[in-house]
Every structure is written in C-alpha cells, then in structure tokens.
Amino acid sequence: MSKRMGRGRGISQVSRIDLLKAKHQVRYPWDTWFGEVEQWKTVVLQKGIHFVCKVLGMRSNVLQAAERYGIRVSIQTTDDTISISKGV
View 1 (tube, one colour):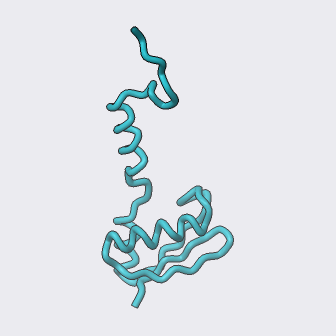
View 2 (cartoon, one colour):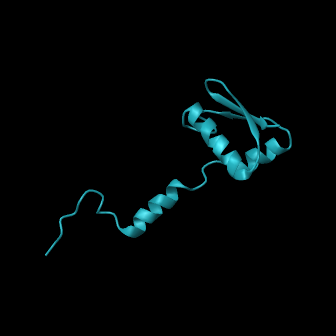
View 3 (cartoon, helix red, strand yellow):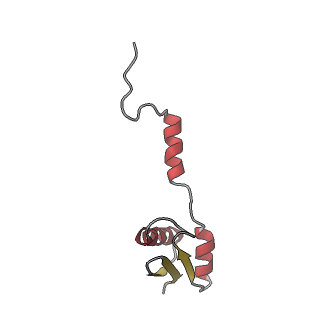
C-alpha cells in the first residue's frame, strides 16, 4: 500500500535538515568587517560587491550580527552603500 506524497514530503529528513543548515551558514565575513570597526576604521559595503540584498535588509543584517558579536556600531546608508563605524 503506497501513501500519496503530499506537498514537501518528497524531501527526506536528512536533506531537509541540510537545507535548514544551509540557510544559517555565514555568508559575510563579519569577523573581518567588525575587526576593522573595532580598530576605529569605517567599513564601506557596496551593493553588488559585498552584498546583493536591499540596502535596508543588509542594514538589518549588520545590526543583528553586531548584537551577536556584542559590539555597538553606527550605520549610515545611501542608495547603494552602507558605512559601518564603531558606536559609542
């Protein structure tokens, strides 16, 4: 007796877990960028070179990553760049 495969059931548990892990892999070199910020350097990220999402989405990513790393940052954005500097 065969069960009818429902939507999404064609993926095994192992590959489903692999897909979830792939979503949470580090995409950006936060260690490098925040290391420079900690030395009071300003890091300028440009859309299309350093990231491909929307500028406001990347701004959110930077703020969340900074919180995970336990550092304060100041962010300034333009239409296609994000400047990250050490917050006070």
